[in-house]
Image (tube, rainbow, N blue to C red; front, side, top):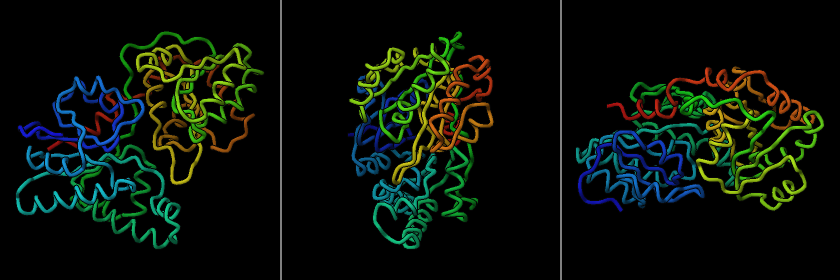
Length: 366
């Protein structure tokens, strides 16, 4: 629970926190970081070392913002449908306190949702699409009207928002900008990777493409007998992944790897695959494994489901339709693993400043 003493005048509230969120806090100006739940990769020891990191309820967030006179609060984006009860509480409470000058808090958001929210509501509730769309438009218009600034991480996300709330997106009082969700190079330039080494990173869920990869890998080996595959992850189809790994000498399985181990493997790998598949109410917004692999100079093999698919395609990475045949996917993997492009050349395409950090700077600009 937040302490009663005054703290920083900036704050973030993420309902579900993960280690990557905490890593972004290091080296930055102090700010509250509130969360209610954690992902499986959450580093509790790191959270304990960082100042102003607190596990709270949504009511405690509102109380802390008022008590600490927080001037800028980042919350989940308006299209985060499962968080609407929390968002409506936060937005409406601060709208009231701002009106009566109890606080002067700007609510800001970072937006990467690229799945049509009216379709998602229809799929979850069974309501007709036109009713779902009316509900979504009403709620999103209110949340956008009480948002001071929003930064979009992908063009796909901006397109979805403009479709549902074009006037709210374009109104001058809600300052908006597009900052691609791309990483800067991760420290020193990695050396040459191991020849023909592919890595999968993430949960072993079908929607993350692990089943497509397992069915395709034998076809890759026919073209690249020396090919190697490293699987980094946990959960999902873990039993199937264990069996697959045991049956293929070319495959190495690392369950629940440490963060340092992830970057060591990426540094030694030629390419990463995250061949995301569509799922009910879900589409890959960006894909943290893609971001982290790019920062280490890896070639990327992706489906067209990620929100940065156009950037990947424009910059020489392998992007295929999500339902592409195993044969064509194997050919794309082979091209990536045998690409003459060096890690340094991949890194040259990246921005000098991390996109999420740049988005933060714009969100918290006063």
